[in-house]
Image: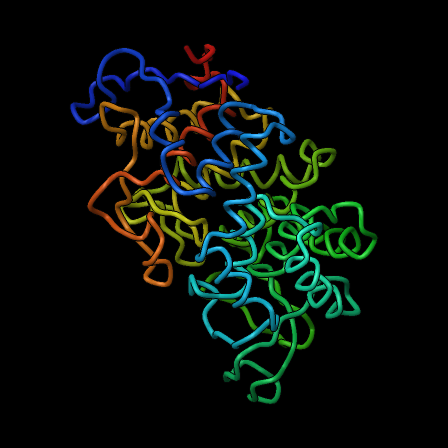
Amino acid sequence: SAQGRSPLVPSPVGTGAGIGGDIVEAPVDWLLSGEPYVRYRTRLDLMRQDPAAPEVRDARAAMLEEPLVRGLLADLADWPGKVIASHRSAGQPFHKLTFLADLGLTVEDPPVRAITRQVLARQSGEGPFQLPVAGSAHLPSGEAGTWGWALCDAPLLIYALAKFGLAGDPAVRRALDHVAGLVRDNGWPCAVSKELGGFRGPGRKDDPCPYATLAMLKAFSAFEGLRDGPACHVGAETLLALWSDSRTQHPYMFYMGTDFRKLKVPFVWYDLMHVLDVLSQFDWLSGDARLSEMVAVMTGKMDAGGRLTPESVWTAWKDWEFGQKKAPSRWLTLSGWRILGRVGGHGGRQVGRG
């Protein structure tokens, strides 16, 4: 089989619980002994194997037969399904959709093709794709059944559609153009569609919304040719500045404190792993001292074998191997090493597997 390349990371200085020794190699063999979706992404993202290689194709086929993956596809078959009030709910259909996109499913997979057709069918006049909104006081009618979008969901749908292979679709680009145009000189604000009236989260109107800014950067990360645009530079600077001022700046009540720094997957809300996964997509950030500090927090939690253990979990994902806090998680570990492989100067020296 083709030999891949695994990133190496220096041991963090002055952390007794950090990585053992001066250099630790990604635990590729351990990752390859795990679930099909972990094996598939490990071969692609760490070993850099050709998608057409037999081992990669076999891992992908096994992933598509994985009961938990099939369960997600079944849950989304009647998109958008059950209305959930909180965007933070890890069981939200659009969070499940982005996870499937991260696994590497595409519109060439029939269940995904059917789901994306339903997503595309609900495009607002403004451009972004709509979701049903649970009834609440801020809605004009106060009734369930209102369709609209917010900057804490619209960019994630764009991200998923682009990752599924629709980055060039005119409808997807129209949606991106609209939400991209909402950027300000301090990132993206809390913004919603006209159907939702003047709703705004718990913050000053001039403040950036950290989660909306993260979601927008995530959307841009799925478009290779757009990652170096001015809006991305503004958004990245917003998040990195919030990290530097994390003790005093908490716009819209988004903190970068103890809970933020707990290792957690999948990428649902505003936390260390999610922010690192998004920011590491922008190669022009390599060498930024603030990003290095964030990476060091993560690597300081690796065990002697370069593995990461979840410190917080989403109960909606309790049946997955990362839905526990007792043992190292392969998906979390892969996510961490994938970040290290992108950031280069933060421990990105690489050697071939022996």
